[in-house]
Image (cartoon, rainbow, N blue to C red; front, side):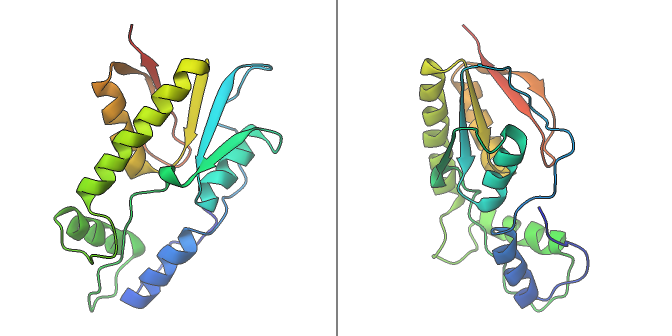
Amino acid sequence: PEINRNGWFSYKAARNYIIAYDTVGVKPIVKPPVVLETGEEVKIFSSSLFRAFDTALKVFGDDASITVDSAFIEFQREITPLPLILPIKGWTGISRFFWMIGLHSSDIPSLRSEKSRAVVDSELLENAAIDNTRVVLVAHGFLNKYIIRNLKKNGWDHSYNGGNDYLAVQVLTKIE
């Protein structure tokens, strides 16, 4: 993402950072992590958060047919109000921990409901794979983790695991 993560943040600054993070584009991509063959059948999905859609455009090109779907946005998060000054990774780590154990506002979905959404998302991808040679999802780490778990429960297996960093590629294949 095209945003500065360096420095120390108060609660308010961290909250504003998360809002900005969800609206920024991404830095130029020198070497795309995925290259499609000319004429290859592929269904590309993207989260509706701009940084994911911008990534999809930079990887697959402006002419690519990309289905943008809010079903693929990152698991909800909020910054836990604490009287601290922390790096942004500290804020997101602590806040995600509180969210996972159920200490969050009622305004955002719980971990349980987000896991249920990941089940629906994995079904959507599986259904798309019935009609398409390849299905690509450009989304977000935490959501992807649970989609992969669900796909594996349904008979998919990793044929390539490229890690979890920005632009990481995970390839799953249906085991027949």
